[in-house]
Length: 350
Image 1 (cartoon, rainbow, N blue to C red):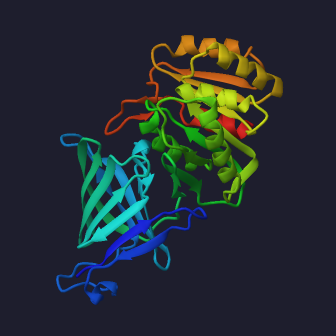
Image 2: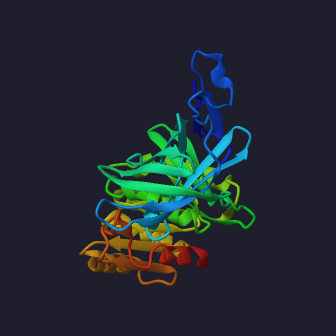
Image 3: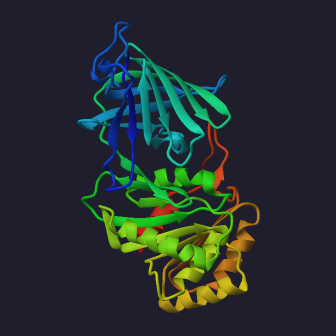
């Protein structure tokens, strides 16, 4: 009976995923060997290249890296260079009977399912209700990992920590607080920023937000980020959307918790928000406002006025993108124009 392997990422030090061998009743399931039908017992390590494409459309170049960095520990990363929002590091690896299943963290509707056929992987990439055929051929040894991902259980659902593999140079870190509208895009942003060296903690989405509810969440998130390997503790901040952005501004206007910067997304300017921004202005806290959609310019102008046009306060409007800052593009939505570059450049300037 073939062994079933699953990479379980639990709480603890980032990157310390553990490989659990899910056993059947037969003792032979513990043995790392193929059964009589030639099925592999463990995922075949290597670098695979090929294409992913929707039916009737040209294929998009893609690569899959399966790594075995330490005993009992496997990693898998899908890279799609021309459609970056499809790229991800899997949080779960299921392998049995030459069939591989990779699930994207914080975006369970994206699943790569493949069957091993010699040196080929054949299967599909599921994107919510759609599925695109995939064909990948082994090309050699796996490339180095880009970032690691860890599930962090929360009282209201799991958070996900995306941390670059290279921790030699300390970099910025942020807690990403999506609302219901922007939650599906949170994993895409976390992937894009982690590939640029930014540590991202994606918290569970919230339909509504208040200062009392957000304060303990934010305190815990900032504390976790400051203790993450590779984080520059002087550059730990927050990105919050919608009502959570307004509530976060009010939280940071208090004496505690302290953050190094604030990024807001699609936040409406209301009296309480305006008062919080005045306090943040006094403290000279760097603020970046992001807006997407047809009304982006008007809403951005209101936010800029609330900030008083002070130095260090920047506002960006993306009319061609949606409120989630995504635009329709090929197999999947892509990040808006000049993104993530403008956000990364702003973070590095702080």
